[in-house]
Image (cartoon, rainbow, N blue to C red; front, side):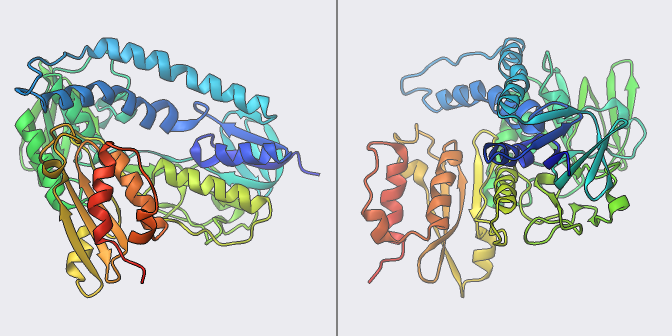
Length: 450
């Protein structure tokens, strides 16, 4: 008889939701964790980022009222803000640990490695289970260049006691742009070095261009088409040098060139689990090539966005599988947000795809910042691109504006539920909320049932 019904390797969102559900269903469950309980997002990623970002969002929104009632802006003390972050974020792991133990989940500290299809070894102790779920996530990629060890990563940035006066970020993806936005608003000299010819290639190009212009106006320096070749410690700071000869001296350098799956030293080849450079290969039930071993979250090889909500969805799905559901996983549309200032977000069919396939889609632009100026706090350049199929059902959206995170959730529900104008008109929404203005403009554009 196995020690546990299910063992989870990793304790982030990719696993703990399933662990809780199974424990509540009276299964004997264990979680193996070698780092911090509850994983990257809770301790070193999303939660810390959005906490630190909050005051920047508020001060930027106040600027929209300059000259119409607001004439001063508050300042942000990064050291105080960081102390507050530590006060809020540091206890989360302990709180989650207490919840898990209260539910009867066993927590095993250390590195777990498969020794056979039903056994995980931690140090010298072996634990057996009927089913095993791998949710070991990803880690920052490291450039293979001289001086790479002098650079820091996103986890380090979110723990900086003071903001560097000169900051260079490597890569022009989501993490770099979000961090650059905070640093430049604190007065730092900020440079971004990017190998490609543009930032955020997965997002609507015109919205990215607006974000770029906003960041450049704030003082961020972009260097596209540049490959970092070395980092050197000098008397005046860290010297970043590219292959073309570009040289930038900074007080700190943050490497944000992507993330790679944590698949090493797990015993995957020992038991015959297949992987590729994107992670663990799974079928449409999230099973690996070993039928009783599943994978969940960012460690999976997939084209879908590797986001916390996706990992949570997969974790819940695996719990249902282990409790008897036999259906293949069916992902809904997945929204993505970039927490720059302003925000950008998108979901479903992209604007570029729709514009290149006019036989099946059409795009409607809503400059809601101008049309709903006071509702959206005088953010007059806020923009919404709506993608419809030929039956006028909403199938995609892209948003530029500080209201993007909440608006994209509303639009995601309309897309997922295939909502028609008739269904929407039978619902009553709070007024005069900002989103009700969007709903009023959207309703006439939607499919009307006959």
